[in-house]
Length: 376
Picture 1 (cartoon, rainbow, N blue to C red):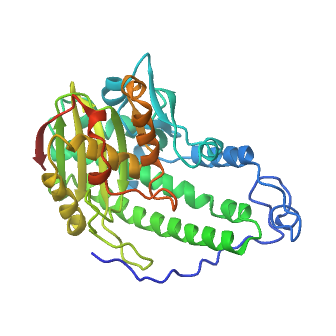
Picture 2 (cartoon, helix red, strand yellow):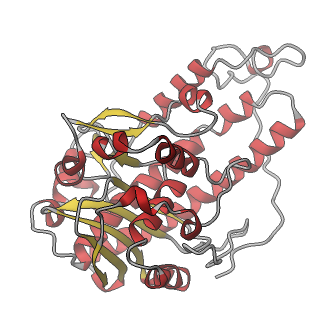
């Protein structure tokens, strides 16, 4: 489907000069980052701390009709299962996850760098209360994985909730980004465009989350579509994420995102382990068939011996919620680690890469073969 129009609408949100500066200095904006001639230099560590505080505020993303069951507060819920998935790749209780602190990203030239992370905290977000984190996912966590539509939906639901949380917290940072843009007209224009994209992304994520909530409350698994790839060995990168897909693994357009009121099709993807097996799942709802069916169909065009590497390239290019097996990552050559780094900056104006089919690195995924592909 083609979404929206080509022209970017003006984003008019401004910071009042007498309002407190979003940086947290407790000064008025006009005396801080809004100063007409001498704004303070941006302190990357203070900015990073401010962002982390914003990200830590969560809510239970269970359907609103179920909130009467909520226990007080939220917990750090795993988007990638701790015992099944992270447990399959951990070493001495740790996995490698991206360091998402602003100062680390700046230091590494916008590339994301894997660092050792305790497997109990990796992949978590404050997205569910204790009751719903346990009870919503019981058919997935407490039963053998058989690849049912219900189980695949629950894997996707975690990704949808996590993406909504990420966009909601990014939306809260709108004025902070404007403040740090300074007086540069170009910088402020770029930030305004970025903020408008965040606004639309949040709107569209809320719409899709509502659709997923409807499926969950009605248990209407007939709305669930997907492709499940089973490997014969543990896939070394575990992830959970969601996107509005624009192009498939070959770089062919499946939908065009724009700035209008239409809602783009949405797709979730996850790599995970369960019951001693390892999987990659694409999942979507029936109303996103127009883009997701051709996207998923591209899998059948990829040679099976190259598929693990192609999927890895795609994962690393489009999500930061990635968790690496330390044994696999440490065994990579310098070229292998460089390949991972290059994938992580895809999408930046200086980091555009060829599509995954042309940028996969098959030798780095030796010993991992596709055992089965099931259409859900």
